[in-house]
Length: 336
View 1 (cartoon, rainbow, N blue to C red):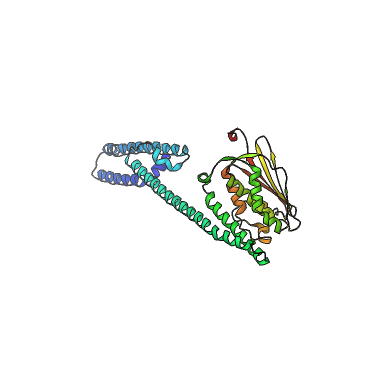
View 2 (tube, rainbow, N blue to C red):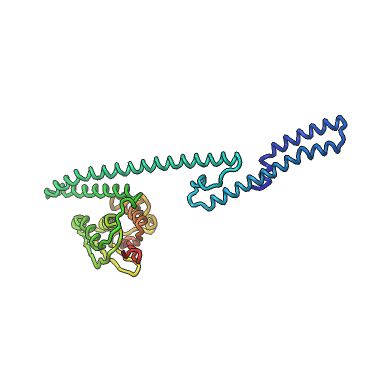
C-alpha cells in the first residue's frame, strides 16, 4: 500500500478535522486571540494526528507486505490462515478470523463433494456389476441361436457391454490410485486378451489381424492397460473398411521405454480433427459418418495414460489409416 492510497482512504477523517479546526480558528480570530496561539493550537491538534496516521501506515504496510510475501511463498493458498503470524492489532485479528472461517467452510464443502463423488462412484460400480449379469445371460442365450436376428442382437449387446465398461472405467478414472495395483506382466498377454475381446468383430467385418513381434514386460496395472489397448483396437476395427481392413499390432523395445503400436489402414482422421481426438465428447466427422461414437473412448485412454505415467500419441492420414503409439516407460525405477 502506498502512502498516497492510505491518505486517500482517510481523506474524510482529515477533512472533518480540518473543517473543525478552521471553524475554531475563525472563532478565535473573531475574539482576537493572537495568531501564535492559533498556530500552537494547530500544532497540538494536527501533530499527534499526523504522527498517529504515520504509525498506522507503517503498521498496515508491514502487515500487508508480510501477507503478500506469505501468499507468494505458498503452493496451497488455502493454508494461509494456518501459517500467517499471530495477529497484533484488532483489524488483523478480524481478517485472520475471516480467513479461518473461509478455510473451514471450504474444507467442509470439499469434503461434502468428495463424499458425493465417492457415493456416485460406488453407485455406478454397483449398477455396472448388477447389469452385467443379465447381459451375460442374454448373450449366452443368443450364442446358442444361429439365426441372423440373434447375431445382430448379440452384436448390439456387445456394444452395450462396451459402453457399460466405459462407464465403469470413467467412474474409476478420477482416482486411479485407489484401484491401482502395480505388478510385472507380459505386454503380449494383455494385448492378446484385448484382441480376444474383439475377435468376433474381426470375424464379422472380415478384418485381417496382423500381430507381429509383441515383446517386453512392463510394470503397471494390467486391467487399466488392457482397457486402454482394448479401446484402441475397438476404434481400429470400427473405422476399418469391411473385407479390406487390416489391423497391425507390434512393439519396439528401447533403452528407456517400450512402444506398442496399433495401426490400421482404415478411413483415417481429417487434418482438422486430429488435434481434438483426445477431447472429452469429441466424435469428429468419422464418429458421425461411420459409427455412433460417444467421444469418450480416446478421452478415457488419454486420461488414464496421464494418471498411470504412460505416453500416448496418434498419427493419422485421411483415407490411409491411423497409427496409435502407447509408450511404457522403462528404467531403474521400474526394475524391482
